[in-house]
Length: 222
Image (cartoon, rainbow, N blue to C red; front, side, top):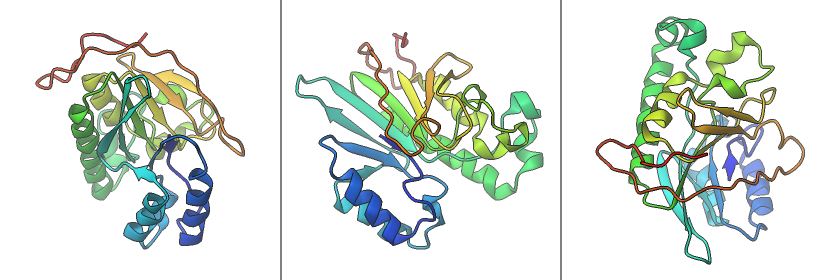
């Protein structure tokens, strides 16, 4: 799983290099795009470069990977957006500190992630975003940058849908482990993967299938 920023400036040559490298993995590769990737002026072609190498790019969508023993891992992904965290910046943070266009993007990305999680039918459900859904993984990031590192609306969606795990990137001065206000475990992989590959090993218990009407599984991750 790649939580965005496969490239530095969204150039096609960078995308091709990243795709060539990731395609050597003997595992399914699932990715979301990050803010650096979105600098590209050729977004459709950018995605095709990755997908032609077998890399599945999630953009408000979901996929299920089935292990050889039949265990199904469902992954829902969206880039997410900045916008701010109301607990730190007040309830009007998105309205007063960002452009209207950013507020619209927050709403769109959160709705897409929720739809993707609702669509999953698997033993374990993982959500992946580029932007942070919680301040608990922002670590040494300056408080003044919180509004551009993620937004609390992502956390609201995750606490409604209760996936087993959340993986995000973007916060390079953050900490690895955190959780949403509702207790969903979150991993910030932007810090440990700088210049090397990070392997995160977790023991996840199969979840009870989600009741679509409420988006609340009967079993929580522990």
